[in-house]
Length: 454
Image (cartoon, rainbow, N blue to C red; front, top):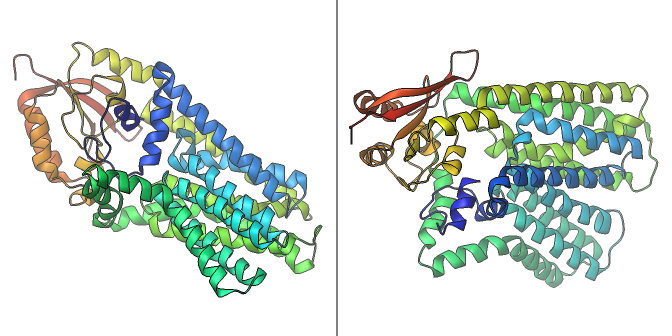
């Protein structure tokens, strides 16, 4: 949201405002920012519409392998399972899941379930891969699902018309369309003299990130496993039972199951490669896995298990939302902080805490790297193009009125940077605002510049 707003003020992502997210995501939030004071409602409504659209497509696709009721319950499960992985906050996969499932739906209904003509196959592939290209500009992790879809389309091409020249032409066309949005953006940056900035932020910096500690990686993998395992078990139980006993309502169910299973596998590979960082990285798994859960509704006693799974999702999802509101705060807490940090108004530096403060308070442009992780995370120390200690000294030399941090240090923090920060805070700042964030004595703290201290 913050970067989207800065775009409207003329700042160029990766140059004046650095982050490694694709430009498409920033442009999406720039659109939401056009709603001014209603921008937070706008992005939540946008996320809601994306979830609604994804659920509708999921229900339509699930009806090819299950009854309509089973497909409907699967759509309900998707909506509620999102909350277990932080999806209620409008995370980027909430938006790109819609684009990916739309691409998969095109291929399912126009290629998998029928025998397409050469023209239908080519056109469907073009439309689907362009949707994948747009999804890549929301989150690059969609690349694995895009690779699967491209390979699947080529296999269908070989089956429909075994002509090597046509296959090469179609494959090239589909690949170019998937890359088109990213290539266009890259070319524009290079034409403007900022090609290196774009390449470093979008590609190079990804591979420069260090690894998190073994304990954190293990904990994150356990969280991802707990989110995915119930869906995998239910999917295997429902689909396995139907396949074992030959229970099919439509002759197209087997090819549909095969396609959806391969999609689920590609999504799992993507999460396995990138998924050790944050819980919301599991969100792309949910559409294909929940689609495969739908057949459970149509087997003896399967409905009981499905209803139990849905109730678990509702209960723990709402519990997580309540926990996030307690920990991260709500609009009441934000307005309270704005009130404190407006007496007087001044520059703010968020070392660790809610970046939304930059969006609702005066932005002074103290650094091109405003996001807290660029300073405080040890794994990012060589991946952002700055020396975090030198950049911190540069920021604090400008004497921002307020410095926001969290206490105590978190497990992946760059302690050398934190030590430097607190050395300066102790000499020039005083504690001004403090809010308990959890039962573990974790606090959000605002420090204010001492009077008369430049």
